[in-house]
Structures are given as structure tokens and as C-alpha cells.
Image (tube, rainbow, N blue to C red; front, side, top):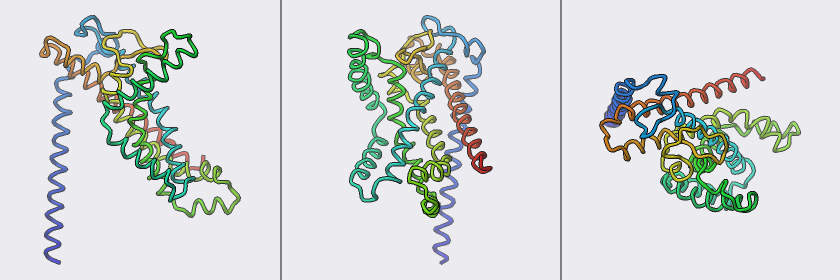
Length: 301
């Protein structure tokens, strides 16, 4: 017993040290970005369009494009992810081969590199779906068969789909079976039980999956550089088939294409700081929505 207690303390100490190291790394990284990024963080930098060479002007089109991309991605991934999780947990047989294949596919999707999703979006959404829409709806004229914000959002939705599915299924699994049985005993159909009992109880887990999807989607670069992000585009995207600027891709371009990296470092730090702040803002908004929904459910409204 004494030996087990010693082993437990050793693991507890090692775990505490690991947590301290991780927190220290986070503080150092964010502190470094904050110290060097505040210098160029002005209203003009936030609300002006970039100028030629992207060493002057601001990054407002990139901020707008990133926010629009994340919102479109969220609108696409949450219904699809929730529907998939509800089917696997509430409708399909526990021994169904189809469900096993779907879970295997979701696990494989979670491990696929982001750049592969970008190539898939380019081949499927742009070359196949977009060109097909152009030939049917526009007589072959180029409209959707090109990089656009809608294809980037759908590609990012596929990238974050495993996160939403797993979070939703875990939330459904946490709901006691007695709730379902009581609903059935009162004469509810399966769909009524899911809509009135299961989904309201699982809304917290569903929105948690959405928050995690936002966190990942707002910082990805590889998928959007193939499917919609533009190198230099001062105009805002006003239609679904428009290209757009994106903060992560903007950082990548300035890092790799600038002839004078030292001169662009202040802009890079400020852009990364804005990306972090935008990600935190989107996450905070989702958390507020989740808390508001939970409060309404708690009070029966």
C-alpha cells in the first residue's frame, strides 16, 4: 500500500510539472505575440484594406473573410454532424455494419492531414460540383467552377465534421435511457422523443462541438489556399462564389513571399494577434449562446 501511494505521488507530481510547463509555454507564446503585435494594432490597420505589396494599409478584408468563412462552415457542419450522430446513436442498430463503417470513416477523417482536405475540395467541390453547376445553370460560363468562399467553407466543414460528430454522440450517450423510456410511455414517437427530450438535453455537448470546430477552422490555412483564399483582394466577398482573403493565409503569404521578412515582422505579429483575438471572440460568442440556451432550458422556456 505504501509503494502504491509513492507511485501515485510520483505520477501526480509529474502531471503537475507537465501542466506547469504547458501553461508556461502558452504564456510565453501569447505574451511574445502580444508584446510585438500591439505596436501596429491601430484602427487604420483593423479597418482599412491592404495596399499594393501588402506592407501598407490594413487587414479588414482578411478579418471579414475569416469571420464569414467560420460562420458558413459552422452553418454547414453542425446540422450534418448532429444528424449523423443522431442517426448512429438513436436510429441505427448497435450491431449495424453501416454504423461501424461510418465510425471508422469518421476516425480516419480525424487523422487526415489538412492539406489533403484542400486537395479534395479542389477536385470535388470546384472541379466536379462547381463545373457541373456551371454547365447546367450557366451554359458553361465560369461562375462556381473556381475557388470561392462557399467551397472553402464546405471543405472546412468536412475537416471539422469528426469533432462535431464525436462531441454530439458523447452528449447523446450521457443522457439516461430512462428519459427515452418515459417519453415512449407517454405516447411519443421516436422523432418526438428526439426533438423534445434528447436534443434539448444534448444541446450543451452539440454547441461544445461547434466551439471546438470554430477553434480549429479559424486557424487552418492549407484547405482554404486551394479552395478560395486570395493572395491580394481588397474587395469584400459579397457572393458565395467570390474569393476572399483569410488571416491565416495572409500570414503565410507575408512570411513566404515577402522579400524583406524583417520589415514585415511587425505586420505579421499584429496579424497573428488579430487572428487570436478573432478566434477568442468567436469562441466567446458561441459560449455565450450555449450558456443562454442552457439557461432557457433550465427555466423551461
